Image (cartoon, rainbow, N blue to C red):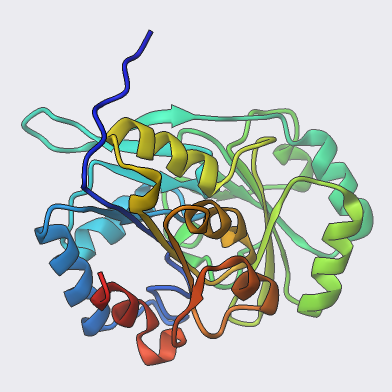
Length: 276
């Protein structure tokens, strides 16, 4: 039986990426980077909790110049941990997968013109059409491959991604709510997205695992997010710690937060981190 580490005064600070620290054009402001590095230098665990795949997360950590012990990828389906050996590379610490076949059939019946993609635990990203706003996961990525819809079926996935560029955001989210699927919906730019993770898996469940492993008290958790795929972690953090939503977040996301910051365009994350 694993023994939990003794509680510490160290904080766990988790940041969503798209729309929270990263603009639609891929830019992260100097003010945000400065505050992230300041928190990291102070000894707290400041990390990422995002829908992005492992390779993308590792690249962003390098870009930020931080080396947290843990990071959450694929909306909680994969958690990575920095290897204590000399190379310091990240290894998968936990992985959750599922067979997305039934969900894909259900989704396609309602959204026949949507764009679909499936990612597995090895980072292979199969997609029916290039997904707007996720160019880093298609395009020149050697792990990404365009396939027929039928080739997305029958395997084990960490997530399904559905994009509906021609469907209005509220209409898209209403369709998703009516399907009864356990999902996380969000937007990147003008495109509505759905991420379908394994049942019961989300950023909050993954971060709770990380919190326990680090021995951080519930009052020491702080998260920042802007999308509907951040709602669970905002509520989880806000129960005892702090869940900050960015000012441009939809109303239900702001309602899930314990506090609302300025928008990403006004460096909301930098303002929130400066309070810590």
